[in-house]
Length: 316
Image 1: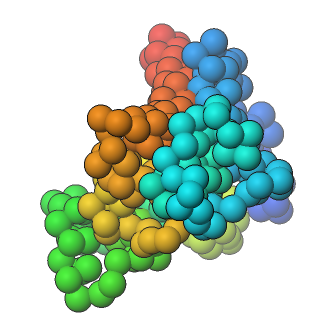
Image 2: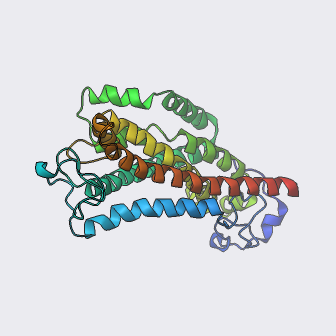
Image 3: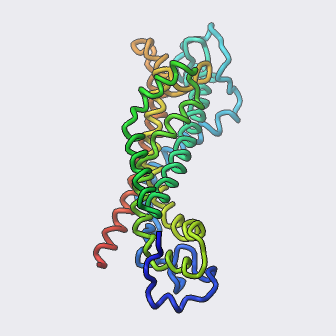
């Protein structure tokens, strides 16, 4: 791609490319006219509640293994199906095999959160890379990546995973690989649009006239302006990924027994829903806290981003 015409003002830039601040303009303000980064966030009450809900789930997953009585796999049929708050050794009761329900929910939380984080990171890496390459270079590269993105977007994730599990045994790693490689299109589309708007900006073009290569310009000036928006998409995606993962585990396509997971615990507990509803309600409640908390937090980020665009439009 040939470099766009550089305004005369660029001639005032020092000869050293390093003198141009990362993600900023030649004057060193760090906030060029085309900068799309959202401003510093001010937490709304709903976001504080969301962070609190997520903190409860993360605290359960992190702290319960450190406390006495943590044994998610130990069985005691003589104490099967104990209701919550009856036995101090089992505060939330036991399952049909006499396993401590609090310990299993804590382990399931750590497993689910770990898988969710891995999927979101993989999605963000693939989607952001595809979007930046497509938006910066354009032309045939963009056309080819658009075809790939549309093809991936058309793939039904659950059906694809079922087809793969017919050949390969289901596992957490397989879930991460399949969902992580098929859910990145949203990241690619957003970052492509931002990169296409940035590539003609003076603070991106000027280093090329000073001898810098395109990779340096991308990593130094494009990526810092893209990653805040990637974080916004990731925050929005967490709740969706948790629900997708729980659905796959409910169908037996995710984590395999005896390792607990939210979806598998709900599936196992539904047989006892009429007599022992806590087997379904408790893991469902923890999953609700995680999903609702992520939604509240994501609304904070999307509201701030929307306000930023409105302010920029008003200045024009």
